Image (cartoon, rainbow, N blue to C red; front, side, top):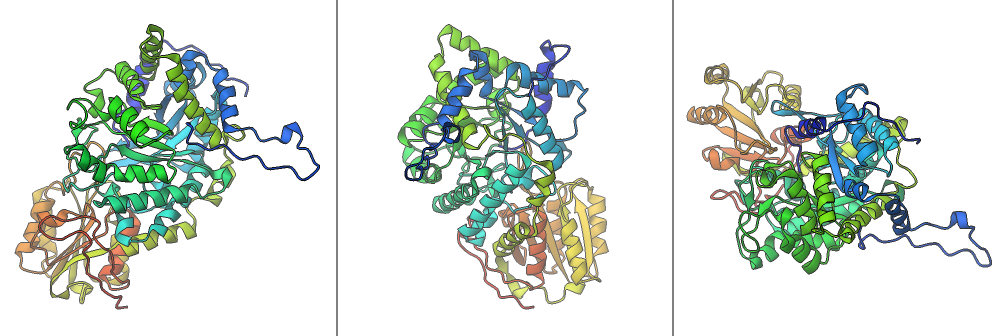
Length: 615
């Protein structure tokens, strides 16, 4: 799942319709696949006092379950979004949150980013942790806090370790680096107050035109994706008991071979069941075998098994039949965000919640109107459409998971200790190593890379946003090494006249390096270069001077610019990838990355030119 435009607004508007109490009083202060801790045997001749006897996760869950009414049990299955940005306690926005905590008793929160043009406003770890602590104090049952930490916690928060996108790890070729990412992500998440990581991505990205998965996937080879996803799970589960997290394989039944952003519309996976078993489902089976705690469903259709207008999130054949039955998964099934267009356009909020539970889902992620979803499920139980036993099965899975991550004994975090864990030098070294090893050289005519005359090179940095940080780290690193080189930063909002002026400004250069940032994000719809960038690159090629295209993000860009003299990709738009690209251009690091995807018509899976460092 990715952050969604208007997700928070949808929740707040829906709640505002409902009458809220004038004053909210604050209270005084999963499934069978989750293993119970094994009680230690007492020393010979000694008895363990009752107070020291370990209490099983199931016993804790049973105690919590007994304290909840039917409506409160259903509310436990609801996860609502928050931004982590400062929120005054006297605002209606804050009152909405306290209402959901103290009156409805929702089960948890998920951190999302607030869109700001083509960038996202990320939260501060201390502000996030402080808010989570306040909400935990209001909750009748401890809240579970979740996040789409695909590039580590940095995907949603500043001042944390910044990892490249998933595809970079496969290009680097070392599952041990993915395990380290899992460990670091788990430690940083728990330090801030999170227990549930909605990662790894188990999608097999074999569609070059995929606008929403792309570099978020480990690649096009099911074996690669299986190996890397399993490594992340193992790493995240290898932390100390006090830092235990839940991890999630997504987006079942596989979102890689699609060309539609499900934030807009319902996507479709074509192919028969044999193809699904061999390609899309292989990484999910591997994740289950590796002990993944939860699986996220996708809002996409599978015509081979269900009608073409039915999202997998609402499909009993896929969730109960394939995932639970055929694959034997007994952990948590969580829906992708229920406010996404792929499901919200076809089903009312309440009906989508009911049908997701009927299909086999346990947790309802971000319904557009939480109270309407609760009301609809309550009505379905009272009418006999859903049994109370069915609700208790899902609630029990979630409560056991909460107990498993230690929420019965510790639900608050120490704010003073956060920066002892997050953003450490050691963790950042791991991220830098991944970025260095992932750099892949696909084409290198006349041995253009490493650059022989960087001082006479014009560097064009093509940023997606005028207000973003893309290109800043790269510009700084280039100027450190070639003070007299021309470095031109442009963005996709610039008009043709400005872009042509930039080309003329670089007219004295003997060669060009074009660093193109092309990320994937919700509601973008496409992953190629935007604005006047395609024409800019074509104009540079038309000068007959050598052009090296460096793809920071979408690795398939060579298809759009086949005449580039050199082509190098780093699979990510994050600053560490920028630094590694500069180091590769200047010959400071060896280049050894291998393509985890095929670039149709230009390069095959597994290709990559190997070059030694020259400095």
